[in-house]
Length: 541
Image 1 (cartoon, helix red, strand yellow):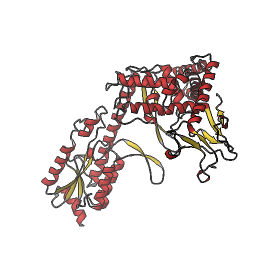
Image 2 (cartoon, one colour):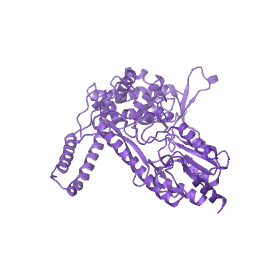
Image 3 (cartoon, one colour):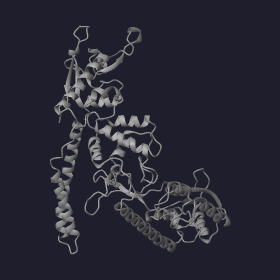
Image 4 (cartoon, one colour):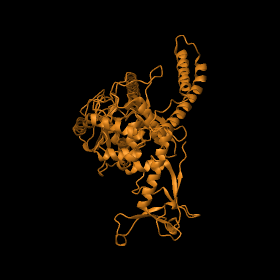
């Protein structure tokens, strides 16, 4: 019998004299999803089988080892780690799979194989409080068995339920782990069913509070709710998201996590149906070809397909929410993108020389060469920078002339609409969409009836076609709403409001009105000539 075989045999007899063992301490909260993050971190909240906190587990493992003559040399700590829940991973060969992810556990096994702790001390075995602390996943159990069998390193528990040192013990361990795995699966199913019931009742759940509401997730936070309302109106009137982001940060508002706002987090606020009173939920989707995981927020519907009204105060109306989401969409519209430019028409002006067409840059005039503070020029880059370097024009005069052109363009559109904001018309195919949704309800009701009025084969044959038709109509409706609100919601008093708009808002109006502006050469003339500017207007869709 070799030295390592002797280690396993001695451990089986309970003799740990001369052995260095490490403890594996895991905090798991799989059997109750209601505890707070603070309670999970502290280990103060114990649910299900999790009756031992971190310090208690380490103390008991250390006492077990030392009482049998061994040395306790290290603790592997897995705080708030599930030994059951699988996550999406990419395997070395590029395939996508779902595995229980426990880097600390896997690292401990690797250390045990090589016989050394992370700080270099000799490691002969691992001890856990019981088998439930080791794993609830049979794949990880087999990894542990491999270390015991092929590397002759003992893995023990202090309650006596875990025995990986004998054939019979390994068989029992496989049965026990399978039982614990089923318990976790049963718990997960009950929690999921509970959440579905809460959704249908419109009761808010989840972790952190949503922006706009207090910690109870029901009562409005007045200042945050008001900024959401005001910003929704600004978006409908044409303000880009970048302007909303800058405004919220400038006013000192932060996300519920205390972070600064960015486009994505602001968009998430407005795309969440909760702000108009609908109960929503997060939906995980896996791309069938790439295997990539994505999340989206959707409206919870009842059995009749109607939106579930949440048990919390709404911030804006359903109509306003639909208008905002149609405008911001999943991709930015013209004039609603992010831009960090500091001059009004950079990116819009282009060189008008034949065979050039490069975007003009803004260049400040050297202070020693001008008596006009803040003077700058829009100029074509040099040949080495992608331009021709042959066109330059005074920036302030360009800004004044083109601003007047843009405002006049919007005023012309306002006069064509009758000189006042008009409520958008009803989408022409609204009744068709309603009819398709009614057909889906009727078909589903016929299949769910007892006895069934339609067979499962017939139901699942007809349902996909109706759902595709519904999705197509919804997409068409959203595109129509985006075009309609973009046109109708432009404020008719733009001239009066212009000076109070932020630079991103001004650029949003400019980019919605103009494709670009060609700046033609001066041809040796030094006098200012606005005819050098050739605006290319964006045609109304």
